[in-house]
Structures are given as structure tokens and as C-alpha cells.
Image (cartoon, rainbow, N blue to C red; front, side):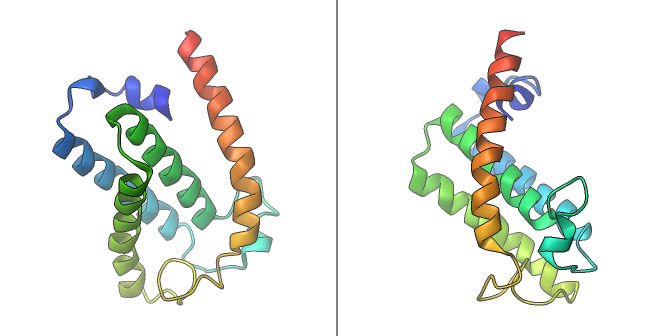
Length: 140
């Protein structure tokens, strides 16, 4: 993720307020993209039978990586980073409501349809992979 951000323009010159806005826009766009790939609301475990993780997990992996990248570049505290990340999800969740998606995956007061335990297990693998990819790209 860091390599993508670094090559997308002069990232280091963004003002803090512009960085916050840019993060929010990118995160909301990612969430909405993967939400649209999940309109059938198939069970999470069946989605893992394909070559890709479930869309909701992909959105969580990528927005988490994006928030960590911005946090590192702009010196955001973990609390601030998490608040911005949560705000992006809250904004995107309004679309899920408008699309009539069931509660528990993309919106709502619970996460029963998300298989959060599987996400946690796979997220560690994803973070390790992204760090390795960033290290490879940094050498180029």
C-alpha cells in the first residue's frame, strides 16, 4: 500500500486536512466497491472457496492498510487513525442501508454476518504479506 501511495503523487506535501479528506475518499470508495461485489450476501465461508477473500474482508484489509499507511506518513495517533477509519465505514454503511443489504455485515449494530474471527485470523497473514510487498517495492 505504501508503494502505491508514494507513486501516486507528491504525498509528502499534502496538508493534514487534505490527507484526512483524501484518506476518507479512498476508504469510502474501496468499501463501496467491495460492497457492490457482495450484493448477493452469500455466506462468508462459501466466499472463501473462491480465489479471493470475501468482499467485506477485502474492504477491511485494504482500508486498514490504507489507514496504517496514512498514519505512518502523517504521524496520526492510533486513536485518530481508528476514528477516521470508523468514520469512513459509517459513511459507507449508509449506502448499504439504501441498497437494502441485511444488517450485520456492511451496516448495523452487530457483525454476526461478517465472520469476524475468520477475518482476524486472515488479517495477520495479510499484514505480513503487505509488509513484505512494501519492502520489495521500497528496494525498486
